[in-house]
Length: 102
Image 1 (cartoon, helix red, strand yellow):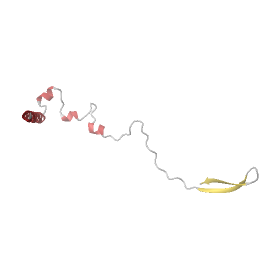
Image 2 (spheres, rainbow, N blue to C red):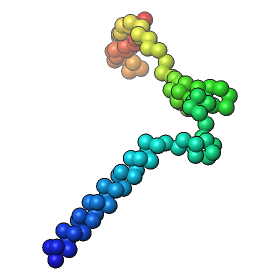
Image 3 (tube, helix red, strand yellow):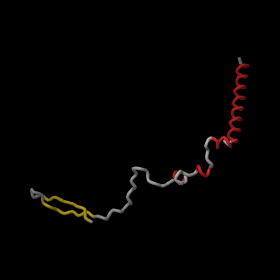
Image 4 (tube, one colour):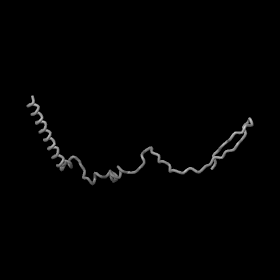
């Protein structure tokens, strides 16, 4: 049984190496004339949209996303102080009432 598994492993290794070699040759060859027959465009025309806008500009434009509201600018709050006075309630007892003034 060990001989069978060893031979099976050798066969799998050689098949994998052959597949990698064929795939490497196909990538190196490119499409060539077959690519033009299939309708592939040259790289200069492929880098623009039908209206002439470059694709890179479209992909990396800095526009806000739909539904995005920009954050309002930060404004420092006005300085305020608290002013307290003593009033009398309806029963005649003193009550301190404070309010914020600018």
